[in-house]
Image 1 (tube, one colour):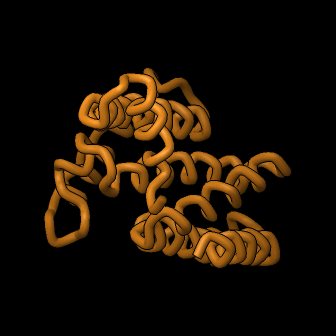
Image 2: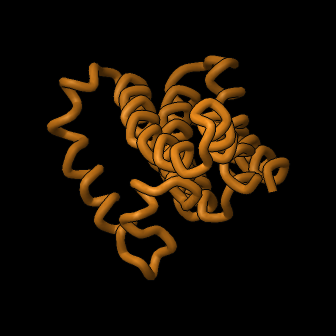
Length: 169
């Protein structure tokens, strides 16, 4: 399967006894998964979702508006309809949360989670590269250039990201 949601689509189809019902249920699960991913990201940024929502909401709306542009590979139906690029958005948000944790804390579990999400994202959809991977590597370079993290640490994170992407591809 090309997308992570194929797994829950087949499970929901089997549980409901209908491929049509399974498809609708899978589409209804996506906003819930996106909300859970955003909650994880907000917590990784150091606060409760309720406290960070006023700050993050304009960025999220901007991201969705940009992604809705049909010439960019993701349209509005992708956020509501199963088996499109919605899982890429969900995995990218989770990966961003893992990226924040891996860069800000020396946690081995955060690094492994980031590597797993990067591999999954790249394996499921090539759109993951411009949506998450390239900006993450760019952010590492900017953080190292600004002296916010050591260049060797940024290089190690970038190498791990690119290695995980290669595994996924």
